[in-house]
Length: 325
Picture: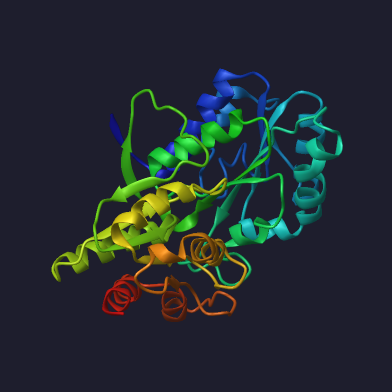
């Protein structure tokens, strides 16, 4: 067991995947000689060479188009889109080609493509480079969506994604690259669609991903002084979503707070709340609370960006109000 950063875990995950399977190759903008815009691929070009680690033109359409074509021919591409926001440039290829290939060929062709994207706000990259873009893909059948929050999950979910026979989008939060955590000496893949109970508690179930997972734990620390015990759950994947772990927690707490980065309409948080209300309304002692961001672009100014993101106190206050209902 060693302590590594989220960034280090991603680099190791890619290196181990490339070493384990000659059909895996990595492509993207500046991923080779430059070591990645966020230094997420340092050393890979030197270790695996230019046939396995490919620098591409500045064209997200070329990156994803190449990955789709290679996957249909039996390879296992790992593609990087530098900022998740740029998925808008190649959205048609992801939503209308990659996601539908297996279905439209009657299962004759699989497309084991993994797309890594730097996601999320809080690091001062302004409105076109800071969007939490994971919600854009929720209504696209055929895609799996992983949202790791820790170094162990950044490694484990990435390895599982690359090994999966179907397309997986892996959103890596920019605000977590320097977060440290433990990684096993021989780490294993993390099953896609398996949530983690991060912290046990009896009063309120808090479901949160990525940066908000860490803030939810801080809110739990804050409320502990008020004799309130939050149970914090990290879904780790949005598709498939492990609703059973959430329902198991609600059987004990009977109160739900969902925390996400970004606007509320059409989001994974809104979907979870709707699902719980539709199927397990009788389990709740209070209306579920959904904590998120205002319906605006992500601000550039530091103070405004900080105000745009849900805070530790926002999460704590939502829990207090749910208990007081």
